[in-house]
Length: 125
Image 1 (cartoon, rainbow, N blue to C red):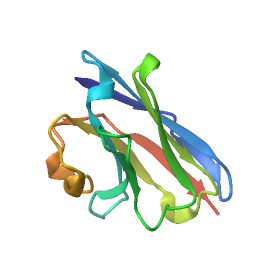
Image 2: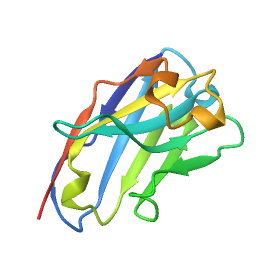
Image 3: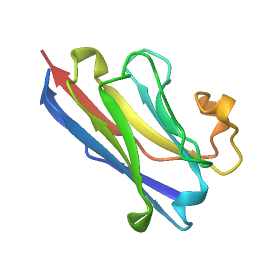
Protein backbone atom coordinates (compact mmCIF):
# COMPACT_ATOMS: atom_id res chain seq x y z
CA UNK A 1 0.00 0.00 0.00
CA UNK A 2 1.23 3.51 -0.83
CA UNK A 3 0.52 6.34 1.58
CA UNK A 4 0.28 10.03 0.76
CA UNK A 5 0.24 12.52 3.62
CA UNK A 6 -0.94 16.07 3.01
CA UNK A 7 -2.42 19.10 4.68
CA UNK A 8 0.56 20.55 6.48
CA UNK A 9 1.40 24.21 6.51
CA UNK A 10 2.24 27.27 8.56
CA UNK A 11 -0.32 28.17 11.21
CA UNK A 12 -0.46 30.26 14.34
CA UNK A 13 -0.75 28.95 17.87
CA UNK A 14 -4.35 28.19 18.70
CA UNK A 15 -5.32 27.47 15.08
CA UNK A 16 -6.66 24.22 13.67
CA UNK A 17 -5.28 22.07 10.89
CA UNK A 18 -6.36 18.79 9.34
CA UNK A 19 -3.87 16.34 7.92
CA UNK A 20 -4.89 13.62 5.52
CA UNK A 21 -3.34 10.26 4.80
CA UNK A 22 -4.65 8.66 1.63
CA UNK A 23 -3.86 5.10 0.69
CA UNK A 24 -3.64 3.60 -2.76
CA UNK A 25 -3.13 0.05 -3.84
CA UNK A 26 -5.07 -1.64 -1.05
CA UNK A 27 -8.22 -1.16 0.98
CA UNK A 28 -7.20 0.97 3.90
CA UNK A 29 -9.86 -0.28 6.28
CA UNK A 30 -7.94 -3.50 6.92
CA UNK A 31 -4.92 -1.62 8.26
CA UNK A 32 -4.00 -0.10 11.56
CA UNK A 33 -2.88 3.49 10.95
CA UNK A 34 -0.63 5.62 13.06
CA UNK A 35 0.42 9.24 12.96
CA UNK A 36 3.93 10.11 14.03
CA UNK A 37 5.92 13.30 14.07
CA UNK A 38 9.55 14.22 14.08
CA UNK A 39 10.80 17.60 15.13
CA UNK A 40 14.19 18.83 14.03
CA UNK A 41 16.92 17.09 16.01
CA UNK A 42 14.50 14.78 17.79
CA UNK A 43 13.39 11.21 17.44
CA UNK A 44 10.19 10.24 15.72
CA UNK A 45 7.35 10.09 18.22
CA UNK A 46 3.88 8.64 18.27
CA UNK A 47 1.00 11.09 17.96
CA UNK A 48 -2.04 8.88 17.63
CA UNK A 49 -3.18 5.64 16.12
CA UNK A 50 -6.21 3.80 14.88
CA UNK A 51 -6.26 0.06 15.41
CA UNK A 52 -7.77 -1.95 12.59
CA UNK A 53 -9.98 -4.01 14.88
CA UNK A 54 -12.90 -2.21 16.43
CA UNK A 55 -11.58 1.20 15.51
CA UNK A 56 -9.90 1.74 18.84
CA UNK A 57 -7.77 4.87 19.01
CA UNK A 58 -4.82 5.82 21.14
CA UNK A 59 -3.17 9.21 21.58
CA UNK A 60 0.01 10.58 23.03
CA UNK A 61 -0.55 12.49 26.25
CA UNK A 62 0.81 15.65 24.65
CA UNK A 63 -2.02 15.76 22.10
CA UNK A 64 -4.87 14.12 23.97
CA UNK A 65 -7.92 16.35 23.94
CA UNK A 66 -6.55 18.47 21.08
CA UNK A 67 -5.99 16.00 18.24
CA UNK A 68 -8.50 13.53 16.83
CA UNK A 69 -8.02 10.71 14.37
CA UNK A 70 -10.81 9.61 12.08
CA UNK A 71 -11.11 7.56 8.93
CA UNK A 72 -13.24 7.63 5.81
CA UNK A 73 -13.12 4.15 4.33
CA UNK A 74 -14.97 5.30 1.22
CA UNK A 75 -12.13 7.70 0.45
CA UNK A 76 -9.43 5.36 1.74
CA UNK A 77 -8.26 8.21 3.93
CA UNK A 78 -7.36 8.71 7.58
CA UNK A 79 -7.41 12.21 9.05
CA UNK A 80 -5.60 13.87 11.91
CA UNK A 81 -7.60 16.85 13.12
CA UNK A 82 -5.32 19.16 15.05
CA UNK A 83 -6.99 21.79 17.21
CA UNK A 84 -5.47 24.43 19.45
CA UNK A 85 -2.02 23.77 18.02
CA UNK A 86 1.06 24.91 19.90
CA UNK A 87 4.59 25.81 18.79
CA UNK A 88 5.86 22.49 20.17
CA UNK A 89 3.60 20.70 17.68
CA UNK A 90 5.98 21.89 14.95
CA UNK A 91 7.34 18.83 13.17
CA UNK A 92 7.16 16.73 10.05
CA UNK A 93 4.11 14.54 10.40
CA UNK A 94 4.05 11.03 8.99
CA UNK A 95 1.33 8.48 8.60
CA UNK A 96 2.07 4.80 8.74
CA UNK A 97 0.10 1.61 8.25
CA UNK A 98 0.31 -2.04 9.07
CA UNK A 99 -1.90 -5.07 8.67
CA UNK A 100 -0.22 -7.12 11.35
CA UNK A 101 0.36 -4.69 14.19
CA UNK A 102 -1.07 -5.54 17.58
CA UNK A 103 -2.67 -2.95 19.82
CA UNK A 104 0.22 -2.87 22.27
CA UNK A 105 2.62 -1.98 19.43
CA UNK A 106 0.58 0.86 18.01
CA UNK A 107 3.03 3.44 19.40
CA UNK A 108 6.18 1.80 18.04
CA UNK A 109 7.46 3.14 14.68
CA UNK A 110 9.30 -0.06 13.79
CA UNK A 111 6.05 -2.02 14.00
CA UNK A 112 4.72 -0.32 10.85
CA UNK A 113 5.45 -1.65 7.38
CA UNK A 114 4.30 1.29 5.29
CA UNK A 115 5.08 5.00 5.60
CA UNK A 116 3.98 8.15 3.85
CA UNK A 117 6.46 10.83 2.82
CA UNK A 118 5.65 13.30 5.61
CA UNK A 119 4.08 16.73 5.67
CA UNK A 120 5.54 19.74 7.47
CA UNK A 121 3.54 21.48 10.17
CA UNK A 122 4.93 24.73 11.52
CA UNK A 123 3.20 26.54 14.37
CA UNK A 124 4.22 30.12 15.09
CA UNK A 125 3.73 31.73 18.46
